[in-house]
Amino acid sequence: MRQFAGMGTPAQTNQRYKFLLEKGQTGLSVAFDNPTLYGRDSDHALAVGEVGKTGVAVDTTADMERLFHDIPLDKVSTSMTINAPAAWIFTMFLANAENQHIPFDRLRGTLQNDILKEYIAQKEWIFPPEPHLRLITDLMAFCADHVPQWNTISISGYHIREAGSTAAQELAFTLADGFTYVEHAVRAGLDIDDFAPRLSFFFNSHLDFFEEIAKLRAARRIWARRMKEKYHAKNPRSWLCRFHVQTAGCSLAAQQPEINIVRTALEALAGVLGGCQSLHTNSMDEALALPSEKAVEIALRTQQIIAFESGAANVIDPLGGSYYIEKLTDELEEEAEKYFQKIDELGGMVRAIEQGFCQREITRAAYEYQIALSRRRKVLVGVNQFINEGEILEIPVLEIDESVERDQVEYLHEIKQERDNSAVQHRLEALEKAAAGTGNLIPHLLECSRVQATEGEISDALIKVFGEYREQPFY
Image (cartoon, rainbow, N blue to C red; front, side, top):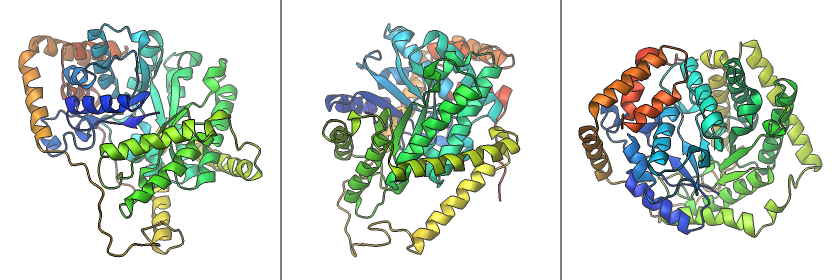
């Protein structure tokens, strides 16, 4: 069970973590704010008005220390929603573990670290694809040796679906991203059975109950077959498509927000029946703001009812053998294979992304879905049918005070004044030199994190070597 708790300053988020742990939470998820996701410090000109608004701000290892204050890192599983700067945000986490005197091999959790879906859907990147892929394979190699319980990448279809894709597109593009990471790691000299058991996936669970179950079943079948037959993995754990499911934020409505609880419950049940290993349930106020504590508690209790009262988690693949589920699974698998063939014809997933293939497919699907809603060929309760005229919203909405940004920026400036700036400069120069070579960059990033180099300083050092990515317009 996981619930996102990140918002505001690290100290504020720390209190929210403790609230969730008291409520019976077994894992923590860190959602970072927009400046952090883009590799920018909280005092960057483009961070104004964004700090702490969509997640927690993390600029240095000192913020990681505040974020996990009095939370023993070897006693919780931590999931981090971070991609472009994932490698150095993770080394800040590792540096904090060292400060807690916790060995790396006792740390458990998952790093999203999926850059390809950023180019496809979420649009938060820093470098061109190849340097990002290098960082991902470097992290796979480092964790295989030093952080063996950590899932180094969570290959994500969630954001692809939130951008408007169909279930088949989410399935195909997510797995194609996964195949690309495997191929890059193998080309970098890694043994597939050394890193593949720690790969995991992150899928959306949308409103079509049976289709979502079939999608997740198809994902497991396709992944196992490819890992055995194409990539020749020998370890059965390498064949497993282990995945986290989050209910669909884009399916929730601002109108009649209480009925989002029902939508979320059905989506969560589909995820469980489809075989998820972990689950996040969105809150009823998802369409309005970051969740209030009451909304978070209801979402968590929804998971607990499914887990401990429904019996749905007591059997593997409970709908296997159903003629309808089996038919849907076969159809989705066939659609995914057609996409794989097209991607191969375009030269692989990176070339397909650069040519805008995936982006155009999703745009078309999103447009068609919206047309179906506007013409009432598809019903969304409370939005285009069963509307409460003159509805007055009574849901309390969480608001992030402007003082959050001011406090975070002040704290960042304090850290810059108190740290050893000559050591920071030395480590950043060593990182830049290493980036120009071919060695593993994670040890250099860890050294930067140990001396409180900021996220933005690390990003800037790497940009000098890798450059910045600019997406071309697609029509």
